[in-house]
Image (cartoon, rainbow, N blue to C red; front, side):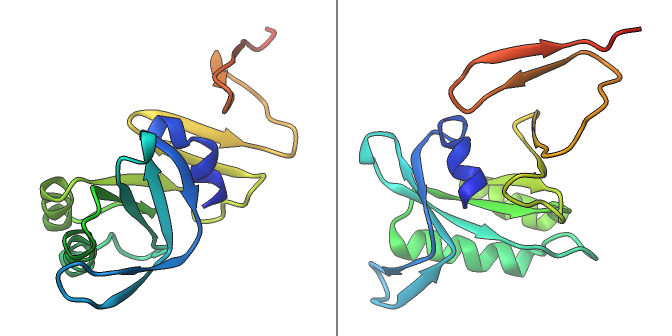
Length: 151
């Protein structure tokens, strides 16, 4: 959740909170959610789930479960974080229930990570990086730097 909180504004969120319990409005069931994204101006929330499946894309059943939690809790939508993305039928469920997909490398840590969302790539490194093409780095505070390798 730490990394998503760093780019909360890009996700149309004020902040990202860690694991917590939310009561279903329809069922009265207590749901434990992995993360909660609070919308700008406290105008609702989205449910965040992380799936580190490395052998297959997320299936329709998994997305259906998240979709019901969204409906039951009154959430405005969801965010699913996964290294491989969604199967075609799962993508249809995600689109219908306002679930965004964030692709994150399976070996990501707080300091070394790569994920993409809405055609933007976010990279964090604690080691030397060799740039072979021009790269624009946008920091969490919105400032940008452009790097071009020396030939």
